[in-house]
Length: 251
Image (cartoon, rainbow, N blue to C red; front, side, top):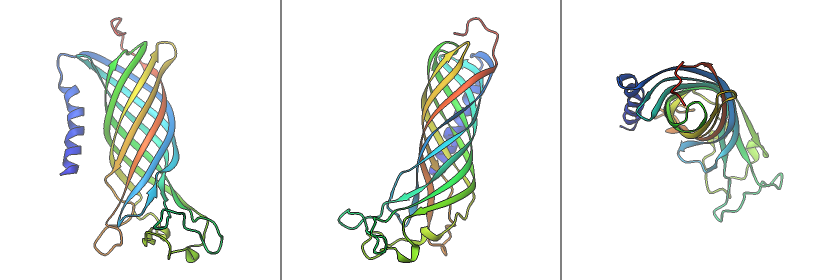
């Protein structure tokens, strides 16, 4: 049911602008680049205590603006990004104190960095100035990703971890490699854009991603029933106009 709702929502965003017959025509194409920070975690079932893991992302961006429908500026945006996702475990005792490793004498730390090529495609609605000034926008759509590699960082040997004091007795994820390299889900974001006719467009956006796929297999014979991503992205993008509509009324 949840998947059907997301699919219907995205279809509505794409279809409504294309069906409108009373909008002001646009045919504008912009290209650029952007980057930012990703906060990610994995929704394991059974649950693994975690903190959001900090990573970086960056890549190229495209935007095609097709119409202004009443006050809404309708566009399709796409990106190709390299992004660092993963998880960082919260290794605590029942008293919320750090678990000390008996060999190193240090609080145990573990995190997994997983690098993806991500391709989101958005239906975009904007309100405000197109040529010079500020514009508020909302965009949402599907996103796919391909795992390029992974790296584990920990300050203890797996065989020498302190299991007796941990609140969580789920350890299987520490030694498992990514089993499903293809990831997919839904992304949505809100942002602010500043445009100048001679300089281009500067966009600041906050985005949320919910993964519909799992990084580990999830059959009845597998350990994890769920292992999907949730991510928060803060991204800065620069676009320059490759093609502009010849209409002096556009402001």
